[in-house]
Image (cartoon, rainbow, N blue to C red; front, side):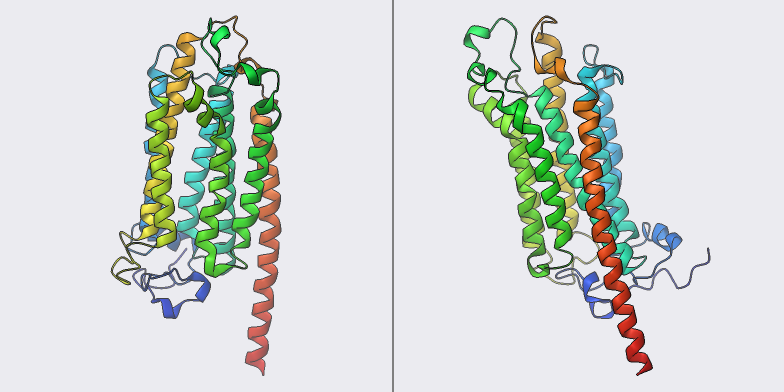
Length: 350
């Protein structure tokens, strides 16, 4: 496919549609009708999306290397057929989906204004799906009933065993919140644009709060292995840092135009979110090793309830709901763009 323009032809914020511009980013914009090949080539050219692409695309390989460490651990080598590892595989699917969708959205969003909208609808959807994958891992590896064998008399989770709070509400709540977050974030591309960064950051605090409920309780009452607390605190720190960058737009807020290509807040946001994912993975790996070391095969733990339906089935169901939401917003966006195109043609004819 021949190139239609010089790849170095980048535009100022005044030369592109207002929906394409980012706060305090004054230059480095790609013209919003790039071809597929031009988008691919732009990954190796200095634009204001280049760093956004690489900070999550390279993260795919870093995450893969960290995950593969489990395969060299004798007592906790993941298996596709072992129900114990079903939650882990769903978590990994969620992370890979998030990182790949984010990097591809930043790479291909300049093909058209409609494609840009759809790219980021998908991006928000994969973030929500990732939170459900995290919740599945937390439920089966950091569950209130998960305790070392032989400690039933002093089990701090004993009051919850008969209530079944987590069994009944935890995963459904995580799924509902994921759907709400997708709806809210997609809506910010149609309305509330002035507060879009604040809204998107706030709504993704909801799944963190819901998903982390068993961790909060474990930190309060135990039992604990030696890695849960430090990795979770670091996970929280990186999430907080990412939220600060996403809302504050630092450093470009204080020096507009100086960080258009490298070092602007969205790149730091990507880096911080990925660091939080790495510490989350380390936390989950630590729990898996701990469970593998202390769990009695005869112990009645929630891990025995892990099935294809309760893990892959849940993730598939959530993906279908999110896919429906994305499709609906894509149809609305397509209708909006057709109406604008008709208005433009009408004005030209007039």
